[in-house]
Length: 61
Image (tube, rainbow, N blue to C red; front, side, top):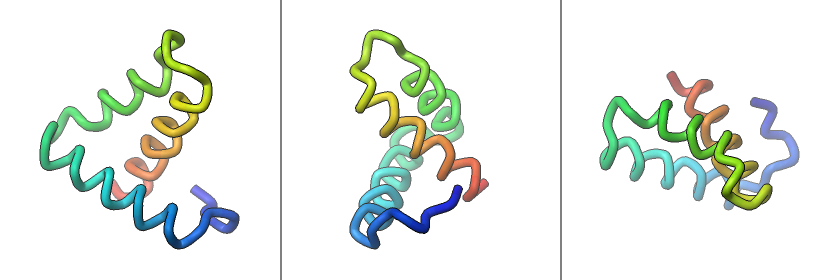
C-alpha cells in the first residue's frame, strides 16, 4: 500500500493496532479484517479503516 500521504502517527497507530489484533486473534486476523471491511452495517469511515488495516496486513504478510 502506498503510504505516501499517511502521517507517521497514523502509521504507528495502525501498526500498533495490527499487533494488538494479531496477539488477540492470531491467524484469524486476515479474515476478521476482510469481514469488517466488507460489513455494510458499519459506517463507511469504519469500513475504510478496516480496509486500510487489511491492506497493511497483506503488505506485512
